[in-house]
Structures are given as C-alpha cells and as structure tokens.
Length: 358
Image (cartoon, rainbow, N blue to C red):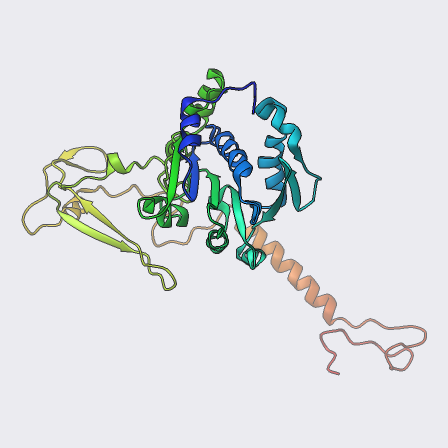
C-alpha cells in the first residue's frame, strides 16, 4: 500500500502492536487514531479467514459511509488501495480488497438481534462508546473463528462508561490492546489548526477533546473542577459540617459534604470590622445579626401600610361606573316590534338575559 501522507511513529507502532483479539484506539479529536485503525483493518482483511464474515459497525449506515468508507476511498489518504473500495450509497454491503464487507448500524439495544446467528472473522467498530453495550457483547461473542479480531476507535467519554470500566480498565485480564492518542500525535495537522482547536475548548472539555482523557464533561456543574487540584487528603480544622443529600430510588442517592472554616474577622453590612464572634458555645450568626443596622423606611412603602400606586382612585371610579352602566343596560326592558322569535306575543317587552329563568 502506498500513500502520499506519511504516518507518525506512534501510528506505526500501534499498527504493529495491534495483534490482540480486541484492539481499541482512543484519544482526542483529530489525533490520527482513525487512519491508524483503518490501516490495521486493511492488513487484517488481507489475512482474515475465509470462513467468517467481515463487518463494519457504526451508529448508523450514514456514519459508516462517512467515517469509514469515504475515508478508505480517498486516494489522498490511501493511495492505490482507494480504488479497491466499491460501495453503493444506501447498500448494506461493500466490497473492499475483493472481500464482501457487511455494514451494520446499531442505534439502540434492539440492533443486537441483527447479529444473531452470525459467525464473524473480522469486525471494525466506529465510535465504540456510541454503541449499545448489549450489541458490543454480542459482537464479541460472534467473533468465534480462530484468529478473529476486533478493531475499534472512539473518543473519550465518562470514566464510568461501560467501555472504560468493563474493558479498557481490565486490559490486563483480557486479550485487549489499547492505544491512546493526543492532538499532537497527528503529523498531518498544521500548527495553526492545532493552536486554534486547542483554544476552542476549556475546562473539562479541553481535557477530553484535546488531551484525550476520560473525564465527566456532560452535565458537570463546575466545568473548571480538577480532581488533582481540588481534592486533598487531609482537611484543616473545621468548625461546622453540612451534608446535602439528593434522594433517589432507581439510582443511588448522592451526598455532598460542605464544611466551614472559622474566620478570624467578621464584618457587618456596611463593611465595618467587628471582633471575631467565634467563641466556645456561641453562634457567630447571632452576634452578626445583632450588629446589622435597620434599613431606612421608605416614604411610599411603609411597614404595616398597604401602598397603592398613584392614580388608583380614578381607575377604581371608572371601573365602578362601567359596571353600573352594564347592570343598568342589562336590567332595562326593551319593547319589541314585529314577529316574536322567542315565543312571546308581538308587542310584549322582552326580558333581559339576567331575568330569564327558563
């Protein structure tokens, strides 16, 4: 295989060492992990057993075409091999290096049924963290041919994600090889693009998308929280403790402790310094509340008096007059002429709506 774009030493090293049953490339965005994994997939496709199926798995058929097949068919990236990739848009199969490859989308847990009865020899997974865990386990169970291999890529997610907790953290117990990539590991990116992309992310998102770390970014209340900086082993002397609990039935109930350190100086509302009220058996809130000055009473809104906006009497009189006019009109009797339409004799006055009782 020839191509104009060279691979970095880290990409070549990951391709050489990806000989396990499960091979996962994970790291920051645009770090070159997809190109390295696709090169390893092509090499494994050449040596794949002829008895098993070859599958490419993704979130949907459109994502497989965009993230995998279009990249493989790019002659700038894969040179002469790009001509060996044949695919029709919307089809569930493709031909790569003369081998039929099945394309399987897994958008939810029900996609696990599409793998039932399959015997696979090689599988490529695009964005493994977006796949349902039931689907991934079923796919591993279908790789039953001797020498079968799974090649996958993903961006980092939560450290409690099933891929991180059940597989990557247990790599020493499984036949699994993992390769971590950062933004600086991609030699094809310009320095201006790397600097611009690194400046666009801050806080926890920077650690995930730029540094490629598995941290909680979605739903984080404090995005600047750093466990290495804000977590200590020994606490200083504390005066009071609070414990906030969020009760849960289906999930665990989280608890958040809050502590208070004694302050040497307490100030009142106007900023004047007062002696430290922290004494044995004394609450500083009581002493502080006694030093607060009473706010100035407003002339318009006095305590204990109902204040009304200016001009309320005139509007009240107008509303009362309108109500009286409507009552007088409703209670008046209007003589009718001509034929009656309400069952009354002609010429007899018609009662108002308020006085009708039928």
